[in-house]
Image 1 (tube, one colour):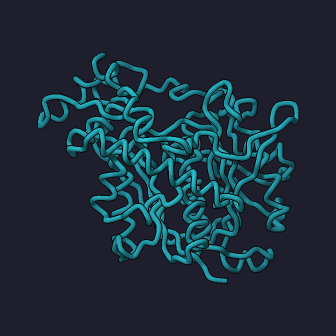
Image 2: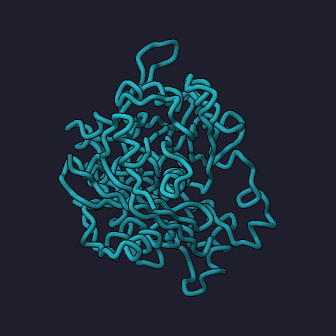
Length: 403
């Protein structure tokens, strides 16, 4: 089996997923095309040598339908010979797009691929595909599917987390994100985007709130109490009779902020990189997927991390950085408690609660951030992981390569 290396990583800023967000004037294909245009100048990559473009996306409908990966490759002028395909494992889609492309390279089917993810939530809102898991009452009843926020509050209730603990985590991730931006932690990977009509565009993650305080977080109301009262709590409690009520503790300050974004990674082998004049920056060593009860839902990402560690023969202490999608504060606290991943190793530059969660793009951003942080800190191993809807999760192990 061949080794798979990452030769480059780029991402857009993350714009707020609203009509006034900094990327709301751009379609998902526009976000990807803009990154594609930047890659050749950064690495000397010959786009016509790319065999496949693989993108994750959670709502593949409307503007995000009709195979965005292939559409973007054509619009970017990469040539008719560059194929494309899409992946959907909800919020874990970006990781699986990268690990799926890597598996094909490892097996010898492909020599050079570009993989990542995209989501324009401002233009294609969450649940736009109208799938039965969240839109059909009978499916919801039979599966026991609940909104992600209800699952998060259930997890907090089961774990015994308090509102103060959740708020403290929310404050921490905002402070780390603001500090990372202030010191230029994302300068190398970020590709700014133009504004409407070519005007001033977006060059930072729009959700970061550097003036967040403990008091401002404490003043926020619970975000999911009304959903719970309208029948969602009953579904969750029926599946978890060990608790008699759900404590609604998460707020918008301790939940992932929805965003628009795209990210791409260039994948090949060490020989393929040498032949094309590309510099390998990291290896993709192993990956795992996991699935759990769809009511609990959000614990699958941690389970995937644990499987990756077993497959690699490593312990949590061997990992220099964990980039774990902040699918609500309670899950992050549990991850930290059970894997011993303190603030210096888990999301050291902040996470999706502070900088934004662009569903299909998030996993690719986390893999790229693993790479960037390992290079900045001199660490060896990093793990990126995401939990998704319906109880799915994915994780991947990255090893930094020295020059």
